[in-house]
Image (cartoon, rainbow over the protein chains, first blue to last red):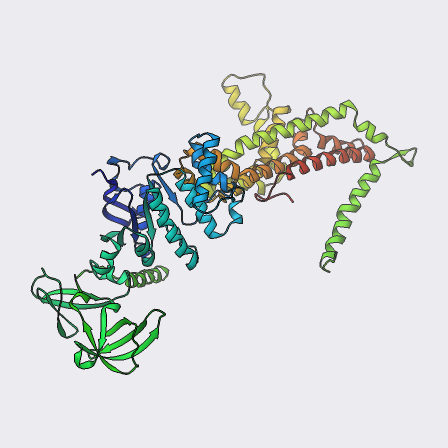
Amino acid sequence: MADRIIELKNIRKSFDGETVLDGIDLYIRRREFLTLLGPSGCGKTTMLRIIAGFETADSGDLLFEGQRINDVPPYKRRVNTVFQRYSLFPHMNVFDNVAFGLNIKKMGKAEIARRVAAMLEMVGLAGYEKRQPESLSGGQQQRVAIARALVNEPEVLLLDEPLAALDLKMRKEMQLELKRMQQQLGITFIFVTHDQEEALTMSDTIVVMSRGQIQQIGTPVDIYNEPANAFVADFIGESNLLEGVMEKDYLCRFAGYSFPCLDKGFMKNEEVEIVVRPEDVDIVAPEKGMIVCTVRSIVFMGVHYEIMLEGADGMLWKVHTTDPVEPGAVVGLYLDPDAIHVMKSSDEPLASEQEEMAALEEEEDEG
Amino acid sequence: MKRSAYAYPYLLWMALFIVVPLAIVLFYALTDTVDGRLIFTLENFSAAFDPAYVKVFLRSLWMAALATVICLAIGYPLALVLSSRHFKAGKLLLMLVVIPMWMNFLLRTYAWINLLSDNGIIMKALQFFGVENLSLLYNQTAVIVGLVYNFLPFMVLPIYTSLIKIEPNLYEAAGDLGANSFMSFLKVTLPLSVPGIVSGITMTFMPAITSFAVSRLMGGGLVTMYGELIENQFYFMRDWHFGATLSIVMMVLVLISAVLTRNNKNKEGGMLW
């Protein structure tokens, strides 16, 4: 395929017997902003490092414009990386840092000066040429790192959690700027993050990963509205996760009631998982609701209220709404058919469960 | 400037063990004993610039410089290998570089005399292969070997320290930006290890130029170095005045080389002071 710039075919990688990537199949289109998203330890950084050439896959093929590049060293690949901890050269000033790649290519002095100036202009650091990296703020260092990578005009830019070390405001600003640069330069960006909000804001395509496997590939809207399984639903945004069964096409049963829904194609009485986003639940009068609940708590979140409700069966519901209710009040919940999303059951542990498992393992190792 | 009370014992210490001894040395250098009487004179200094002594001085300079260059030529690649992340036994081998320093300096030198002597293992091996009429000991080469062996750890350690401090990410960044391993060494490793190199040169050159034991033991009195010359004035000639003068000449020399290396914006790599 002409527009597939990078392809990963059944990529596997393990460190010390522990599987980090478990058969990854993925293609990345030219000029797209693709995000590898997942909790820590899901293999997203390893995948990026394999594309950059710092790690070699144990098996499988890595294709660049259709050519297998598994054994091509990093310095011959037409990709550049923005590292998490910047990794600027401490013995060089900003200009020399950005010019590094061009100097290696033995480009003419005047041309280097022109390109470096243009790139520093783009990242908003014109006039900082003579500064030493250590005298810059974290955000400025990050911009130098971006300029240093982009000045080489790579086909693909790899970004390894580049905003993780920045404060919230700076992070938001850089998110928009990165998106702007990507559109302006028309370069493919592969972005690694564990921050789902960041992924939703910036990406054309999100690849959700867990434990070395891809859980879902899709646009931010797809991933949010049509999560492939409970792991994705839980990891992206907030959700009410329930277990239920499909009674027949367009009718599912959970929390003790049957609900009309938009899903079909399941076996009769197949066990499924149901996700309902908190903002899709309507609070109505008890006699009009499908489920009767008691309001347990209400917290003002700024734009909306977060309301926790308890059903007759003890099930806790999280609802986001702009209309407050009194704690202790008995209300009804109304679920539109399109508020209910039915997913096939998966045994992929949720991110929070994975963390608990990792903590337990650590305790065992210590004991 | 206001000083903390804690500084005074130190000042006392400095006065007692640095200023006073130096004053005594200077006093001896500027005096002479004639017929049992002490007289002030600059005679000693003009004597110190006698061509015979200048020759020894230049020889010391040359030999210390040569030993330092050889130490650097051996020490840098060694430190590079030892500090490599891919080289698992690096820490262990570094111990092997350091362990001889736990042994007495003279013992180490005597060990080399044994190795290089006419009845030593190296000569025996050479004789086995028919090499005759060769002496490995009591010549300039032997002194250089002794200096290099004794001061090599002082070159390796500061360079190793500065190399191990370089963030591994920087090599990845250099590779990512198109540098092969040679360019990466040239543009990242070498410049970032300059402080270690400067420290190593200082820590090797200064003790080498002032050393007297190595040249006496391994040069057999045939390859006199400046330190040995001074020692001779005190112990054999019993001329403390001239010995003190030569000491001052050497101190000035060391001071000059110290200033020269210090001018280098040296922040890392561990200095002598």
